[in-house]
Length: 181
Length: 243
Image (cartoon, rainbow over all chains, first blue to last red; front, side, top):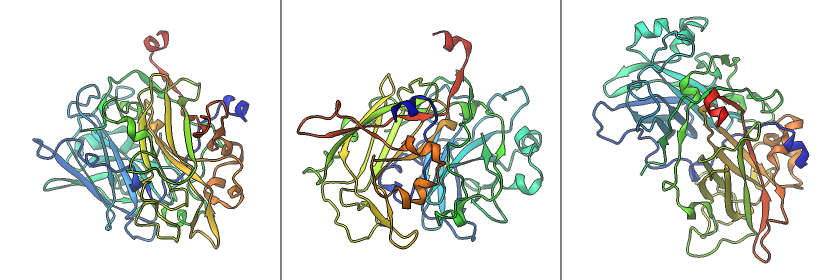
């Protein structure tokens, strides 16, 4: 048995299940920056299943650059939020700057989203882009690689009074684009 | 107090994909909850940018030592078999992942979760909550003390039972190494009827089962089980490789 393991092979994923609230959510989880931080924005949305019903037992994690597009400062960058009875997740953060691109082509600013839930045997990755960055979004290589505007729209968060909103549809007609990365 | 701080980034240039046949498919009808939650469209492949290649870093001082001992979180000790669960967080080429957060949660010895969603008729243990965490050391090692969880009935199909398991959540050097899995126990009679376990391709399932370790077992105190968690491999910049 040990020899099989030493031969390599990564550990398989399993669903987070319905009871992760015992451990994973924590008080500061949704606060990438403390409440009251100057310029802080709420990123929020609802998670829906393939029947159009909200998912009250999902967890969303966010990971992003700081406002200068960097990862080497004091900015926490990481957020974690469960969903409530209406399927709503919410993270308080600062809008990221666009980090340097892998091959020199400028990227639009985005937040990496990861979704975990009962019924998901692997977590899924997507990106939250900002609705008030039309020019940058128009030139973004990842958004441009998607087949049509409908697909792109599933990733672009709409501006609200205190932040941005992006609903996530795990399955169905309005299904969010998820990435292999 | 935040659990998270940010490490200097930019030293990883690529995270390698898992080998085919490692992970379960998203769509797996025998696990009924996937029916309305599994994405139906193929995942869109994209290049890894700096965001995907960095991750939060969790330093000492944000997680307390007692957080790794699930038997000492209340006034009394929980009922059940005390066990040590230890191992390393590694990348596929066996490179350890130091200073990374490992979070665990589980049912009690009777198979009951301390969660409003579990109301099945097994007793709660007033001395057991079932959640713990630790940060791996410089060699990527973690160690938990807990009690062996019981099997747990669920509603997937008639007379369905989850094999005894401990949920693990792990971060790596890069966010795309993130892994949530379940650790199972050797010799469990329930594997054959569990769709969550069996959703994993046959050659990879054994990697989720811990190994009983008599050498690390503490006499008259606790059985020990060894469980390594192996994340996707990574390639670093040439400077780091020379170190």
